[in-house]
Image (cartoon, rainbow, N blue to C red; front, side, top):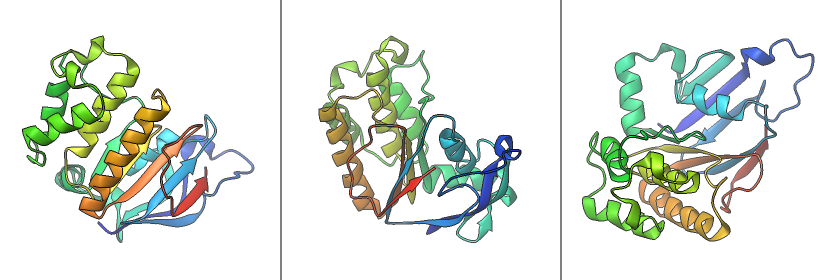
Amino acid sequence: MNNINLQQTLPNVFAERESIVSEVWKKNLEFRKGEIYLIEADSGTGKSSLCSYIYGYRNDYQGTFNFDKENIRNLSVSKWVDVRKHSLSMLFQELRLFSELTALENIQLKNSLTGYKSKKEIETLFEAMGIDDKYNSKVGKLSFGQQQRVAFIRSLCQPFDFIFLDEPISHLDETNGQIMGDLLMQEVKKQGAGVIVTSIGKHIELNYNKIFKL
């Protein structure tokens, strides 16, 4: 996948609004592989909805989302499976971890789909994020900031052309936010991928190619 194209997209829930002031909604724009984007948003402007639409988790929108030149509404179930395994990684704001499983088991579930990361590489990520003592801790027992780091590691454990990170450092201090940014860019450069980060406040400090106001 080389680009993600939005054509006059808008959440259905916003359809009755008389005016939409946005650099994303009701616009034609393109996210290109290899480039880094930041989407700044106020709460309630559809930031998480945007991520869910692109990941195919929801379809309650107007307009068109294309992967390259293919309308995502036309993708089959098997094609979506392939996209989520090999082309598109997502770090959701609500994380979507399995609380009854350990941190490592959550990672292994994702990594087992493609075998993308070795055991040593996963251990190194845990160490770098300062949670190597939480390998065998159930996620439900961890703080939200620790869970956020587990979800971030999971997002790196697959091949991808684009990675979306929805408020990835909302519960992290500046040091851990910087570490996350460094690890992210190492993986992104390795894969030649595109990055889309969303934020309603603090965000990962990256060299963004473009910043959009949602």
